[in-house]
Image 1 (cartoon, rainbow over the protein chains, first blue to last red):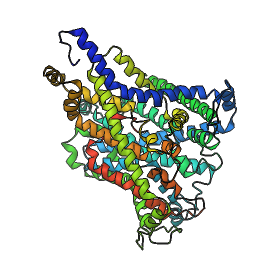
Image 2 (spheres, each protein chain N blue to C red; image 1 turned 180 degrees about the vertical axis):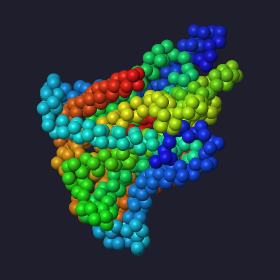
Image 3 (tube, rainbow over the protein chains, first blue to last red; image 1 turned 45 degrees about the horizontal axis):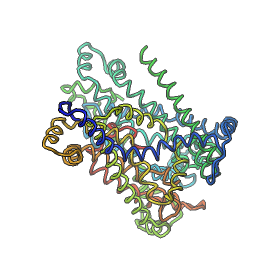
Image 4 (cartoon, helix red, strand yellow; image 1 turned 30 degrees about the vertical axis):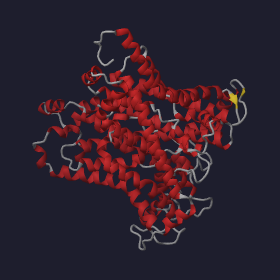
Length: 300
Length: 288
């Protein structure tokens, strides 16, 4: 019912309910079959041994015992955490910086700059990772050639455990800055301009205005973006898969890449679901923790 | 970095003409950022056109010999045309099916009355918290049960009823005035007609935005197609690119870049043409 002013209320309302069901049903059926059932099934498989065919065998908490003692899993968790620590802050700072510049009244050709900075986010991560892998290749890659011209010795970008992590973080930052810039730009534009006018009249300088008007004005979006960087990193798969395949050794193995390898490399699908449950649980716990921390920071 | 003064500058239009040094610094920084964003694409295209031999990688800012040999090699090594067609078909079917499913559900949630509607909607939103990565193994099981592994169906159907899309279409359709719908109802139009003849035409901007974002998400998706597809003929272009690298240490970079360019440039063209409809902040999370 669009607005409630009809006579035969009950029949109309029940007819409308039928129509509602008809409109919603196709989507609900697909969601039930391909989202709800898989989620429930993933939890049940996480408690089973399942090699991809036949019936899963219930093994209770055995998989969880295994995952808690699995050094490779914890390495992948540590790597994912390091990817987050390395990428979140630079991404947010650069994105905010770009958004501030694009929001300035002094800037011309805003639309063009916005689109250009946004390009990395709309292109295929596979293609982008391929380009970086080529540029980072050790002997003939662009990066080392340029460093060579500057007299710096070649860097083993993807072959050294520490540099490989740095390389992945670089690609993640490059790829996501534009995406967060758009969010920040929308947030900046929603700050009430009269606040700045009042502050200028009171003689507050630009930095002062930034700290006491801009930051509080966009704090909710900053919080949202920080949580989003976490969620994105928890899903990290393509960059390590293409650039290093988790290597050297397990130096850049992300949690999802480990899940993928367990499920479709070793065909240990029950265990892969256990890893999935762990990823889900850990993401939620860390996100709630961050949310609490950030909201407390805001209130003080 | 004087140019980086915060949004504060927005309030000083009058003075802005005299602040030349700030302006120059601001634009210089933006141009630097733009170069960093665009350079990898430039490098991809020039490498793919570089006419030196297939396997050696020569670092040249502009290739001394331009040739299409890398493209020829890429198209001969893998069924790239077929992969391109697969990507187009899958992305087109996915975005259209998704539009039908999410706009009809969005219409119902925005404009129709139903007991427990809000609860149902809340349940959908809760589902969004669960990452796709957790669902992937059971989803693969279902697809093999349906004999959908290595078919287009596996890529088109399971994610088509995106909850983010329903949420977005509900927001858009809420903006259609109730008076119009009431008037149509009094004239005796059915709900189906109202949806087709009033709701959809009045939501065009939102529909185009959703189509673009779904098309791109489907085109760029890698994780699920990598799992669901088996043969080179069925690969989408994004899945096909890594298979060009081969097993040896001698990666044919020119042709890998050629295939990447083939995968990236059509989408970029679409993006440039339709970018005024593109508002990612309005549908955060629609990218997987």
